Length: 580
Ligand code: M6R
Image 1 (spheres, protein in one colour):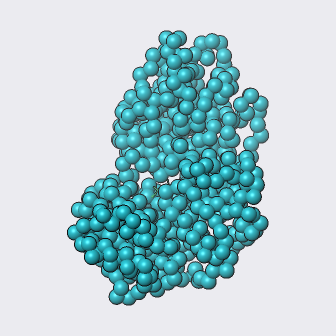
Image 2: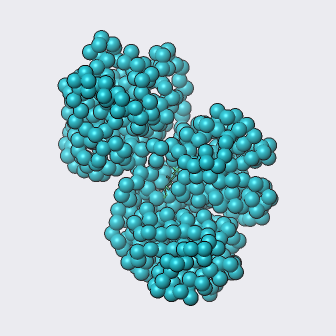
Image 3: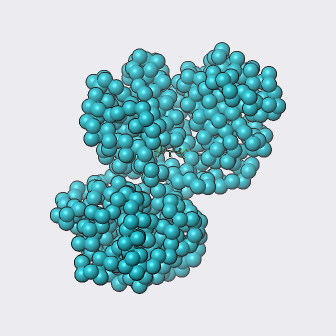
């Protein structure tokens, strides 16, 4: 996680209006603390959201070179001292870093023996001292970078700046890094969104590559110092209005955008994404084994896809990326389908790399174009959800599920996707007020259980995840059938149980009755008039998953409103989990 920015400019740029504005666009990557340093050594750090540091900066402050960082803490607590940038003792070398330096303790021990004093608990502080030491030994910075690439273990996107010099050094392994080519400046960033309002031209770093950026030119090198030729990509970004408009939170804005966002995706299936979908189907048909890998909410969407395809007789498995090695070994007969909103989740990136090395074909379903996972894929379907600012995935999840439905449709599943945007709109319009009332009651509960079966089981997990991440309420999403094998012991008077019951599913009705008999306060989500507290439009079980998911997202949102929590940026989280 963490977002990094570096700017080298021909003309002075506004620190607040450019450097921190770009950083703000990376805030979803971490918001424990932020900081920046300019080429003349002017620096500032603050705990909390980027707005804290913005309020400390004078509007008139400008610079020609600077680096900035938004932190998601890994090593060392959330303190001013641990906030980036980090520096050497004489404060002439400044560093921002995204990733984890795995052998930082070894490197630190060596430096401590040489007399270096450390003031933070971070792994990153090793870097400026390391370069200080190398320079003192008579190396130039490029030689020092090459040594660093040999010695350092772990993942990193690093920006290094020397006081008084309008040059940025950028080093990358595993963590994402991209150079934006704007009119009078170069912008280094963790992703293209950071500068997508400044330029649509970018160059992506490869692993173990470094670059030297001056105001008028850039040069890329491999780990041995050999110059590399780089391709300039002209990217397109699906833009939504990036403000909250009249909404109080991005989460509700993003939930309400779904009729338009889903329509854009569904239209793309017959147009700009048709060929890619056909290619993916070819890969699926010509492989012995299909494995979805994903994390969090994207895992829940993948699970819907996997269950749906299994129903069609196309056997697939769906594995949480961090546990892949417990279940399978990739080989050339496996198609790996990586599902990820950000396209940068490190648990997935790691497994995709392993799969590629083992000869597997790679397909991906991502939201962020040119993300690492997309660039590693043989074919990549985009969910076209536009920028999702809220840490909790909502519209991206719905569009991921719609891609699963489209794949199934092309493989013989009977469904008309064209109705979905309208039905999403109805789902929200008909139920929003009722959800507000229910959420008022849920807000005071310690535990919430969510039950599902078949394609609603992933939704039960998804809804429970949202109660946990947004509202900090313990919630369990489970297979209804498993309830009686233990968890039912926790059901007592007044415990809320949300039952997802599409099309009068008998097993689900029984499970719901069983908990009701033990005093649970059941809230039934159904698609049959008169059969539940919340009714979504008529549909089959697969489509029901979409509408039930939206109801769950709305409930967690309104519970959060009642509790007054930080809905868009829940504690301890980051939108893009780019560490393992
Ligand atoms: O970017 P990804 O889809 O790979 O992210 C995976 C999870 O980190 C993500 O879905 C997470 O669970 C969300 N915060 C859920 O709302």
